[in-house]
Length: 56
Image 1: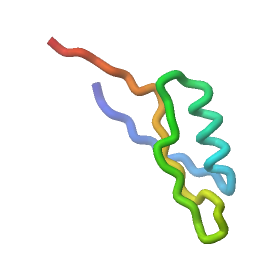
Image 2: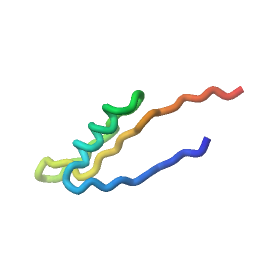
Image 3: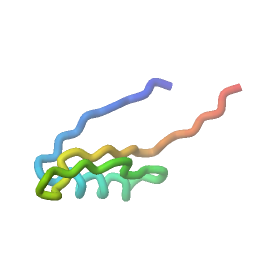
Image 4: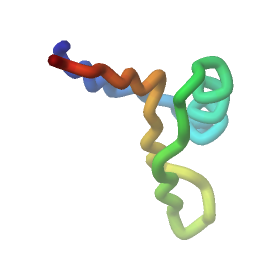
């Protein structure tokens, strides 16, 4: 299976958007929140629907 790595831009509400998406999909979570000097999130890393596959 090919890995897809999208880049999404949220102007001023990245943390809110990430929390919204992880609430929609099972096996999803916020991995990291980088904050600026003002305490606001400027970069959020999250994963959606981590699929686990077994190969024989």
